[in-house]
Length: 161
Picture 1 (cartoon, rainbow, N blue to C red):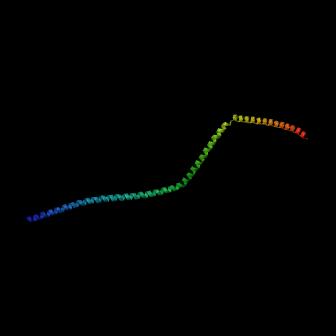
Picture 2 (picture 1 turned 90 degrees about the vertical axis):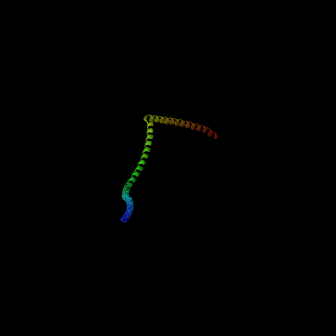
Picture 3 (picture 1 turned 90 degrees about the horizontal axis):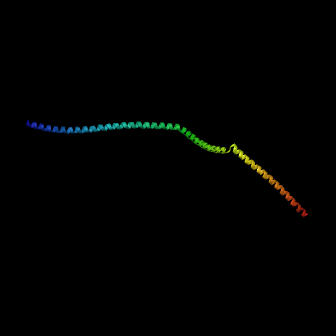
């Protein structure tokens, strides 16, 4: 019996060792299982992110297509708007030039009032009268010189004969 008890104790120690080894293996397997569960959770989260990314990508493509359509709708309007802007700028330049001319004309109009015009007319009339008088004097002088010339020719003609 003692031998059997010793044998049972030895077996018991062996079983305890195996049990301790199994518990270590179970603990290792538990850690491995936890790690695998975490990895699985991360993979699921990543798959969800990828699905979300796919959805976002589809939304982005859809939005880009909508923007292209809107841009295509506004392109003719944009061209018309640019043409209108160009015409507006040209008309604005013309308006500025006309305003400059208007200012110049207004300046000239201020110089031309009834008093100034009357003064100019009076000066021109005086100049015309003066020129007429000078013309008359020169005409009489020419007439006198012709008469003198005629008189000087007569004696020379008599001498030649």
